[in-house]
Length: 402
Image (cartoon, rainbow, N blue to C red; front, top):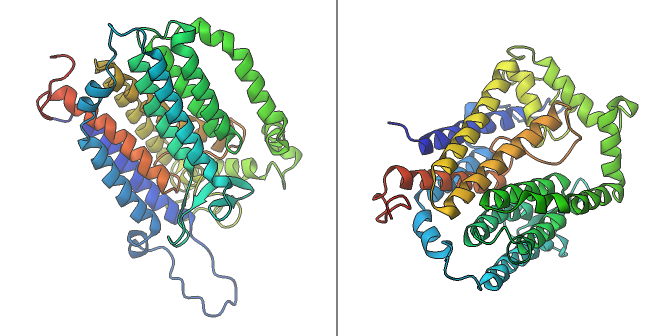
């Protein structure tokens, strides 16, 4: 009998497989007329199996398995259970939270180190690993998933005191603002995602909603300042309102993306037969890969992708609702919300329902560390569910039987 965790694993495998196929399809190119020495044979089953995206898929599947066998329940019971008798240790928990937040900021700050940081399209978001043949990764991915774990841990530890602003919520908001704010310097979409998920988890952990409402003006001012002080972000907002005001400049991305989406019709032009990927649609393998899916596979292909994300989201929420261990409940919620909200943001951008942002479609858009860390995090949901279904499977009792 299939468990909830099995649906998570199957959805991850399906999305990764679709991602590998579509990334290779989007990477097709046309030989110049009269070109000599052109040896590229095009996309074949062999070229897909030997492609870089296939290697990342295998690493992501290994990460999924690693996450699924990690004894998260015993770790949560040992390090994250709140002690109702200890009401004066909030300072220690706040210090651990702050240390974790500073560590994440330190990792992200490495993008500004000479010889280590790598700029792509004017954005300083990557770290190049020396001696790895050009391999690079986005530290914001580490910060995004690290915050899921950190906020879930703090929420579980302080669940009885999050109703108090000073001794409960304030340290979490400070660390969230620090990490999300640092991400926003280079990546507005991911920073907003991190902040939104952290607030959702803290509310679920017991924080008072009115405390957040009092902080909304400050957060809104910070967000507006981040946009107003960045000319390209202002231009993206104006382009979203009217992309045809500058069709060959700022509006080019959105127009070409919507053209690809509209060109697919019901069942698409056929796998590999899209047109926009041939020099028209920028970032067709990464941020705008869903537009290529719509063009080549049509509404049917788009519905499959959206359906798989719905399965992931609903299954993850079901695991969170079923869980009784505070840390694992909040972790399941944070992972599910991160994947779901990131997918929604990307789909809105690609279909012209939101301003252009550099945020990928999880497990589908081309990415190494993104695929691996996302798969590992979803593997944790499989591990959580495994403990729910079979309390003795890992040699320790579940919270329900403890």
